[in-house]
Amino acid sequence: MTHEQAARALGVSVASVRQYRLPPEANAHRSAPSGWADVLAELARKRSYELKDLADELERKALDLKRGVHPLPR
Image 1 (cartoon, rainbow, N blue to C red):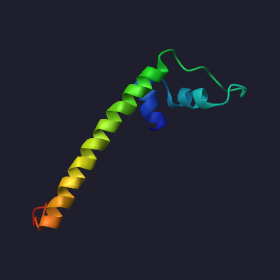
Image 2: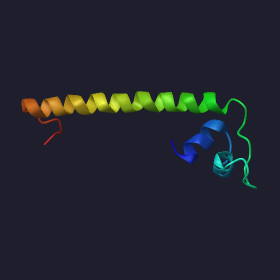
Image 3: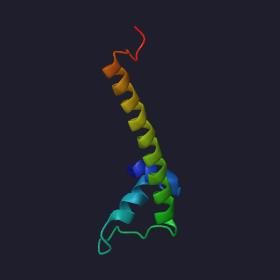
């Protein structure tokens, strides 16, 4: 997940996300908003479903190639 994706999901700026990730002793560190873990967990879960669908599609195409079926129009 990128800083941009995390920022969009949290409704904050990319700079804020970067500040949340700094060590607490850093001058620019800021605390993440409450509920951040749940928001990012949901974002990661959605991404995992997308990646599973992609893997399934690629496996189907690989099987088609093994069978001699060309998956793309010529």
